[in-house]
Length: 352
Length: 258
Ligand SMILES: Nc1ncnc2c1ncn2[C@@H]1O[C@H](COP(=O)(O)OP(=O)(O)OP(=O)(O)O)[C@@H](O)[C@H]1O
Ligand SMILES: [Mg+2]
Image (cartoon, chains in turn blue, red):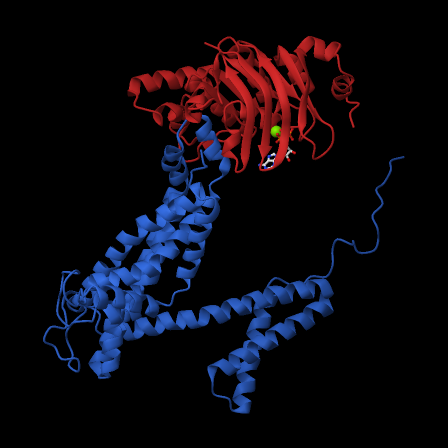
């Protein structure tokens, strides 16, 4: 006689009642519909109100249904998941609508002409003109700021991670922390008093670059530091144990291993300072004509251009401000994408 | 060109913590010396004092003498970088350089130390990979990343990288602890071949391995946690495993420990 396996008659303890996979979507759709209905009945007009009502309904409703069908633990799990989603949506909606609005308003006058001409003799209230002078100024100011900050920042980070011990390293870390918190207007005022008032150097793109460097250096130091710390100590030891001097170890083993992350950090830092307005307003002064020399005389820059055009208040100036904003966002987005590409391309290879 | 190492009165510290105390022994050239002992008794620390890697650890400090033939490694004016060129090291976990190919990993020590012609490098790379019993497995993928090899292959790659710079002494810290029995056997065979040319020191937790590969065995122990590790005895491997002169050694190798 063979031994038949005994299967328990009762439902297995590993299988509980499960809600179908489409349940969250259905719940979301139902709560959005309800949210609409309630706000229509109550005569609420704001988009925010029905969205908030829907979000709350969704959270409560899915908890109630899930705890009735699946049990308490699964219901809590669902609530946590839903909270994450609601938070995500709350964060994304303003961002998406910002980009949407900028694109919608920006494409009106954004074309080849706009990108390749300055304001020149065009009065702010008239249509026409472009951002060439501002684009050029921004590229030069940010470029010079990067040329100053990247080497300084990376070398400082190398010092802190690879060599820094004791008092000096602590002091440097402290100053970098303090610099991270400097408001951009203060950086601008500092350079204004040092460079323009004390050294009597006159307004120029370069003065703006100096202020931007103050803002950029701590970002580069921080991000590079984090990347260098990620390099396993074993690699440094492997290299040192081969009789490779420390500086060559850093140059040939540590930096190549982390270069993707470092470049990524630098790009993000550039993206961050490209939109800085305050120091540029104070130090670069602004002009409507093309000044290709960043070391002499006022220049324009994109953030400042946007500010000035918006301030003018006429319809064509508004359009130009939006188009310039769109250009700025596109530029920063390209930088971010490039950063990601480089990070992926340079990541240590693990495949075969 | 193997060299003898004479250690006398060696103490090593981590900050103010004395990790190993008063170690004196001789490591014979062209032989394999095994270090055994319970975890935390300072085997790795001691091994790292032999090529001045201990001082790379923050707070690492060494007192005493380590004579390589007739030069004191801790003498005034000795450059730790040149010491490490003479005394190579293989670590417990395989650590090939992740940004480099198999070829570049092996050539790294030479290339990062000076200029070599391509043909010279080719020769050294092939010789070292053959020396590490890895050539046949990687000869078709020399330009693929070194981190794409299996764990055992990576460890042999690290051995090839270490012997490519032609050290006089090779220190190995539990080189097989992350490997399967077959790779372990390959590396043990390799150690047997390498001792013709190098002085080899190997740390191992595997008694059979110590018995199989080593000519001499040193047993380390520590009185209690927080106490420094000490050398209990060093002798021919056969004597240590058949008839050690200290009771603690016998207890340890027969598993009657702690
Ligand atoms: N970086 C460090 N900083 C401070 N103390 C350390 C450090 N590395 C090791 N130690 C201490 O030194 C002592 C010896 O450690 P070591 O790594 O040499 O032991 P071991 O014999 O190699 O042990 P295992 O067999 O587990 O590898 C231990 O007490 C350990 O806690
Ligand atoms: Mg160890």
